[in-house]
Image (cartoon, rainbow, N blue to C red; front, side):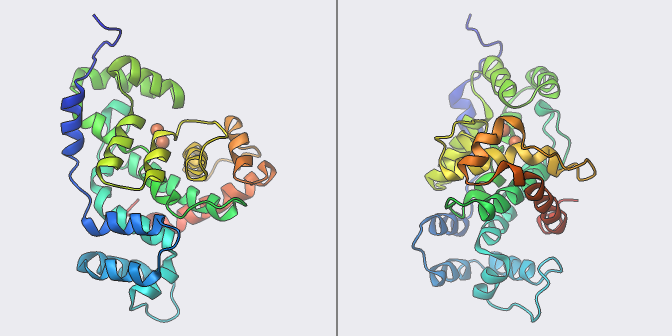
Length: 289
Ligand SMILES: [Fe+2]
Ligand SMILES: [Fe+2]
């Protein structure tokens, strides 16, 4: 008898993770391209032009009310300028993952749409933090934040009702580190490891894989992308309760990470207010109600 109550079979879990399917080639190429510092915008245009439906959806987003273009945007180059490369990446990815991430996750006490809403909120927070940071945060931070809890989708799809109930009870009562411990104790694996595994399988850049793996960590040795995703993820409850007063302090445990990004924790209320406003503007673009 092992210490895990419902120890799961890693090989079978891997199969479920593979059942998540592949990302469209254009999307993973695009993410990898942009994660490379010296990419050229014409390479980005080249990749997007190979995928008619991606191209159409990016142009539609660039012309949406939230983007409010003065003149219609008709080229991918202009769409990249209008949306910003970070948003363009997240939009490209959203089209591929939003269905999977919209599902209800009973193992995590989450209803339909909850995980997607949290993921979009984290992504918007990461983009704002990236801009406010005085250290260089690579553009893929927003994409990593969008995917940070992907492992929950795989674990939920993989587990039987009995396990989901146990985990659901724990998830409803706990958060963060305790949830990871509960997963580890119950399943022998946790959602950050599984999420990183899927991101690897999707051939996403190592910075994204690592940020998914470390999003519950607080160490100041985290890379800029990982630190950004960890803080963004901690901001989500505050972003999604816009009527609550803006907290004057960063979630306590994350102060050191906020400093690590070169952001003065004293400016946190302003950062949070910006994230809330951006989220309100962008939620519709991501299909969040
Ligand atoms: Fe998580
Ligand atoms: Fe999360």
